[in-house]
Image (cartoon, rainbow, N blue to C red):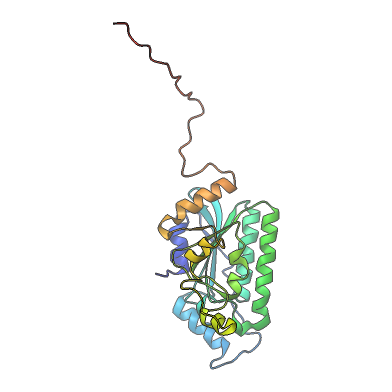
Length: 253
């Protein structure tokens, strides 16, 4: 079952201290694009139906007491397609992670690059990838969580560039769709070849995590990669010493 971007972040981040990033950014119809409907009108329709300005929400906050920046894609906004605003907000998230010296987590759910923005949407693949390189040079982790579906230009850019790549159970992850690939290679493809389970079996992702366990699993990974005290381990008090073990002596009969 798919869930919205805000519900995703609400269940993932700690309740206090959240700050949304890039809220002033809105999509523009610079190309005056029109197919069966004007792009300008599509934007308005999806903004009203989804309640969001665009397909990615980025927030600064905490995860189990640790500083974190998290993003989530809203599939209900034009299929989670990546345009200029998605790319700009993702870069804002990277910059916030660098500024706060913390990790970045992104939940992807997308059909790919937004065709209505043409080359400007394709440019976001390079833009987001370059931003992640800056994050990597600072020694800060990027955890990519791929949900159903993660396809096209999103899977071909930042979604597959995580230090740890996680898939949700039975998520469809790939570039082109099954039918397109089969028509191109003229072969039948194995059942479930684009599922997270298939990708894990073939080494394309690192693990599969149920969303009910996501906070704990990602929290533990972030703690290790950022050298924070793990939120999953109760520390031993520094002032206490472990009691010495005495070998029991057998009593004489």
